[in-house]
Image (cartoon, rainbow, N blue to C red; front, side):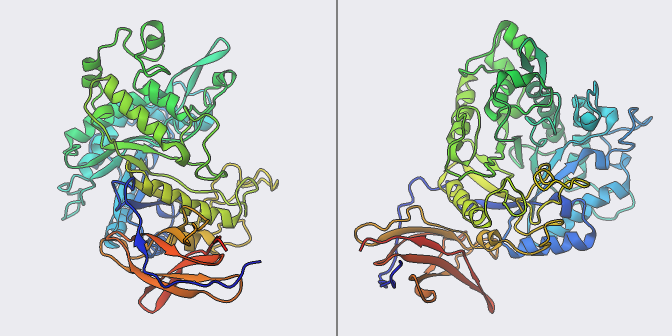
Length: 534
């Protein structure tokens, strides 16, 4: 049984900062396409107001190709359509994104545009499954033209037909979403014998080439813009026998290695192995670098390090091929080895963790408990903060997705949607209610060590996220014993970007939380228990 805490008011001392993120301003990115891209103006604006109040810096926006392209369900390209001309697209189609971008900027937040599938059927070929025909063998030429249209419209000087002012400039781009997942890019494999040959890496390589050329041609260069490649999902089909299925997801690092025409030992693919995945049979480093500049000049690599149901520090089953928050070093290592293999002088390549979250048990039967969801997103943010390569960490969804329509089986109706939101969604019976993760996201806290040392010292990390932007804020550390209420231990100033990284002194086992006052309202983190030596 916990005893009443006896606390010291000793001033906290800063922990050493060695190993902390080189990007200690680490941006907070948020994404909720169902409410922001597809929602009504009322839903969109309410959502943006809420995430702004949560302290979000940037919104990741999926630019779905088929929402802008004319006649997207037709297999025949519209006659005379020039996909590179922004004025060739319907003004009503652009309005969805123009209005969203304007609303984001009006609230002082920034934008990450992520052009991606699904696309128009007339830009696809060889569909083997009608359900994913709009992301099967996309034409790099047509996607490149689409990217030119986007780049021109959001170059900062483009005045649309009928308008009197130019559209604002967008300087942050990420190319395609999860190209190692069959639901976003297909085919992933072609069946050969008892296994399969990779198809998605070379498709994505062509899409990156086309996108890079389009962005450069429209004034979006790596010197002026953030341009990301990758956007990879963390895991895939590891068993060779399952690679005969065209849509089976590919392991993140297998996809990465084939994207760079490397074998599993990080050497060049050669001969028949290279030819099978459209790589040079007799590789020349300089020629490959010149042919695919986006792979080597990109600002950074984007990745989605989901674990979904296991602790953020639990290494995945296949740590050389799957990449979660627990083994981000695998991605960093192979990125740098790929650059070295091609004699490109790039080190400390930034990682952009542009999609992330934890499935909660309520309502998803395969998720973690509500308390674990809250604890895990805090732990994951601490891991990202400590990694000197990480530039941003995203939260995917404010509201949970709805279950699959028409499925009455409680064990399967949630399988095809995400319950990573900070609020419950439709069909949960608790629509709109905040989960414990809501306050945990607003005011993160994490104890790197839950046991105090012999002198009662206990490391504490947290972040005051509300009020995004620069400027130190005051945070209060509160503690309590087994009984009774929380009491103030001390007040501290955060870093310029809201982080607090301290050591507290305790004498008895108990719990700690952060409190932050904004105006007349005080916000609290979740409470975290700890043990002290008697």
